Amino acid sequence: MKLQIKEFAELTGVSVRTLHYYDEIGLLKPSFVDEQNGYRFYDENSLERMQEILFYRELDFPLKSIAEILASPNYDKQKALAEQKRLLTLKKDRLERLIAALEQAEKGEITMSAFDNSEYETARQQYEDEAKQRWGATDAYKESQAKTAAYSKDKWNDVLAGMNGVFAEFAECKNCGKSADSDAAQ
Image (tube, rainbow, N blue to C red; front, side, top):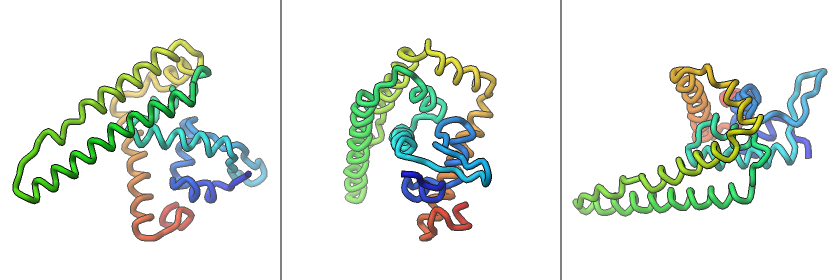
């Protein structure tokens, strides 16, 4: 399988702009770039890595942490999937509590406990800390740390705001029925 960037974007549900950004920061490189025309191509390995990235993004992991985790030579995909499933289940349980609280609010009842997200946040932080502990001594982790060490909080906020902006624009295009390769999405 060899997909052009717009085909890969449509398949994965991310914008071409996001893929360019992921390439720029080293999170997801194309499997092949045609030197004559600069076209980027993605393969099965790219698709697998994108799935892993999207699972972590769904769990609100910062891109920096995702890059550190995936760059580790000791990365255990099966263990990561099991932990992601556990975290997503905690997130789903919270959403179900929020829906129940909305239903109670419609009846005039007030329930504040539904807003407690501490169990999920604690588990997510433990997972991130474990990844740093496990892979923090690796060359890939050190390289990632060195690359981003000079980033200020404002720089990280800019990076995250930029990514959130890309995701928001893409969502708006999707909501308006525009495809990932449309001029608006680009």
